[in-house]
Length: 113
Length: 113
Image (cartoon, rainbow over the protein chains, first blue to last red):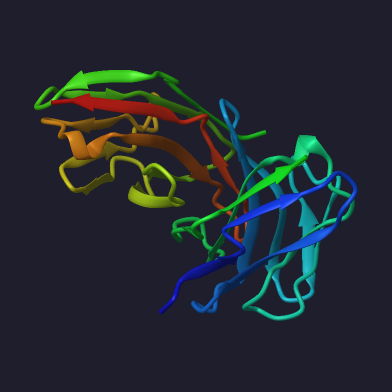
């Protein structure tokens, strides 16, 4: 089991560029989510999905798009990068029941200049 | 909405000291409760969890008891080690299928030799 994998590990973008952060899991989890972690801000939920074809917005969705065409993959797209999107991004997955553990990927550190 | 409050720290202790990190929550219904740990440069990983009132979660010498009457889930360890230095997050997940996790702001722990 690879668990939750994320690519790339590091990325530098210029303002206005677009890119996709990749996330995949091999545990057949229905629930997947994206968080951003900023110093002193804890984790903030960007988007989440409760199954293939179903996505919804979290706390801070502006400037980001997601899709869930398969159970395994949940990519996060930055449409037009801004310096305010400089952050560490974590993808996570779990089964959907209340007591199910959420597993996190290793993170992508993004810098927008 | 649901929320989690925890002491933000930083907390600095000497090796072999007793650790308590307080966590209280507000939630509708009966959530499951979690403690996650994040070591430098890594993603979050589950430390322990409890899914119903009076349950005690334990792992690696850490313990926390689900107290419904005080809506608390305080993390304790009897004797901390330098290797316990990390950020600790308290979290909850509501009782219904597919609900999101709600995280506290995290508590940074530094253990000095």
